[in-house]
Image 1 (cartoon, helix red, strand yellow):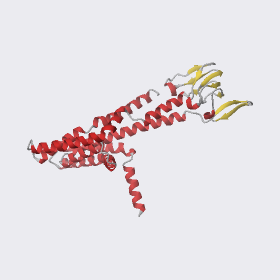
Image 2 (cartoon, one colour):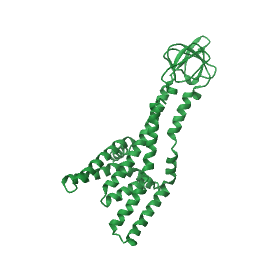
Image 3 (cartoon, rainbow, N blue to C red):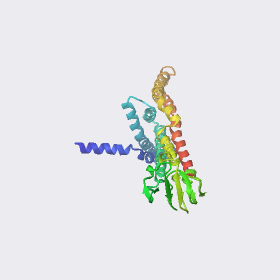
Length: 314
């Protein structure tokens, strides 16, 4: 009894996971474009019928994540923009306009895929920063140099960094001269020449000379750690526009739905339109009110910013 249920839930979880958003968005976009072109070029032929089938396929592909998100929002009695988009797309398809609904859901799924991609880039950046730190450091003891955990270093400790090793903590050179690759912190590709009494930073690479360094800050307060903290803070925080969307999504969704229903009644009673024509106009209002631009622009801007920073060496 438990086996099929567990397998079914696992399959559903895999289908609506973040990793499937981009493939589904691409598939929805391709079938939407192909279906629209075929239906437009040969509307009365078999080719046109194939095009209309592709439009429904695109609608289904785009609805996978939207339906799941909308269902979760309804279960929590917190209707949001996900619900608004799914309702608008579904009603659009119900009155014979699957292309409009498919386009709406394609944009919705693409926005989610871009947001997931931006989060992946952030996680990759955090992973790369963590890998910059060496696993051990050579600290001066009463009998020479001994390996120790960099996390245990404190101000005043003296460490030895040999050529090709990563500097374990922020400090000042007390003996030696070398070239230090600081591109991990500054993005500058040219190494910096350092000598006695000059500052060096954790996570940078000592290139061609041995350095004895006096630690000035523990690893937890190093320049590299501060950058890592900023990346993590950016990863966990939401953009201002996202916070606005989260705050007003429920009242906005309910308001738009009420206005759409009122418009439907008004078109039938006041304008004396047919039920189909009135429904089409009310659904058009619902679709236009779906904030696709806001939903897709925020992850797009975040992704572009992260990509640009990565190309600059940040």
